[in-house]
Length: 118
Image 1 (cartoon, rainbow, N blue to C red):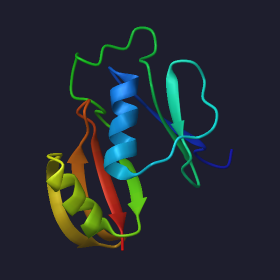
Image 2 (image 1 turned 180 degrees about the vertical axis):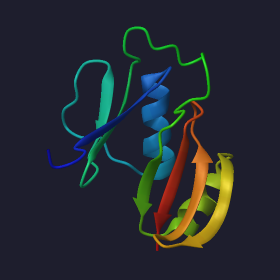
Image 3 (image 1 turned 45 degrees about the vertical axis):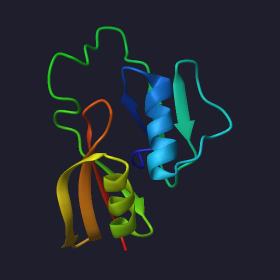
Image 4 (image 1 turned 90 degrees about the horizontal axis):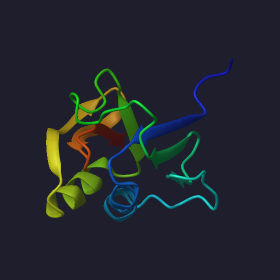
C-alpha cells in the first residue's frame, strides 16, 4: 500500500455540493465520474462529492466525525476572504501553522474543511 489515492465526502445534494466546491473554492470537475458523484481534478489525490452509501444517515450526528480533510491553496488568506464574502461559515480564523497559513470552514453538509498554504 502506498497511501490515499481518493477522498470523497458523502453529501445530501450532489449538485449543490459540487457547485459549492466549484464556485467557492475554484475546483474543476474531472472529465469522468461514477454515477451519483462529481469528481474534481485535484492533485495529488482525487477529491469527490457523492451520494451517501446505503445505510449512511447524514442527519444522525456531526458530519465527518473523526475525519480531517485539508485542502491546499496558493493563498489561504485570499481564499478565506473570498469565502467570508460569500457568507461561508468560518470555524477557525486564519493563523500560522507548520503547514503555512491555515483556517477552517464549514461546508453545506456541515463538514469542517481546513485550508492551508501560502
